[in-house]
Length: 251
Image 1 (tube, helix red, strand yellow):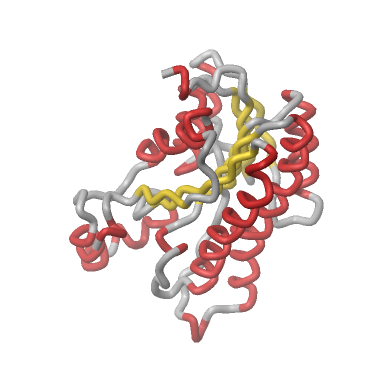
Image 2 (cartoon, rainbow, N blue to C red):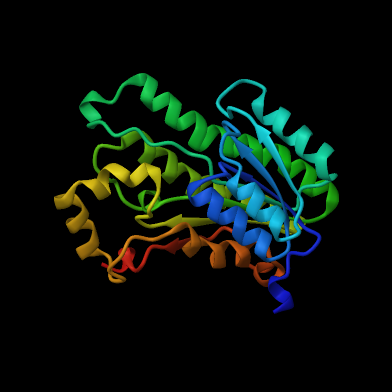
């Protein structure tokens, strides 16, 4: 089990206060890591309090990752707080649901800026730090729509296809530097982003009948995979996109 021990490691998790990011932050903390939470606001401190109750250290950085200069600010503050970053989880993201014919330029740019641009430039800056320290783990949060087209979410689909590509590109460059870059592709998960789908009885039933596990996923379902990818158990694994989807992609 020492393969999965993250004691002494520092993890930076974007969107790490609530939803999937909150579950990821808690999972990494359970495995021993100290956590830097990046959030667009600090109103919800429940995740931070839970982490501290485990005896782990936390630091919250409030930042809008779509703003110019935000990525540099986050990386500088994170390193100043704990002296290093061992694990980066690019989880922050948004989705805008409109048919492709009506998808506004603003919706397109907002989704691409956060889901793709922020993730790449955070990986770039944290990657430089990891190259200097000789090790690191970068975990991108992809999606089923890294493989499929989806409906009414063209910007989101484009961003998640691109995240899968960026994961492979960085893996090719950095595996030789002892930095493993992988991604997790969650299936249909119980988060704020899917609230409208779950509230639509017809659409909810259509989704559930397609999932072999017969249920929506939860943030806790990502904890095992993210601990694996953050730990030395995955040291010879890079460039992979792991589906955590209750079997969705098997149908």
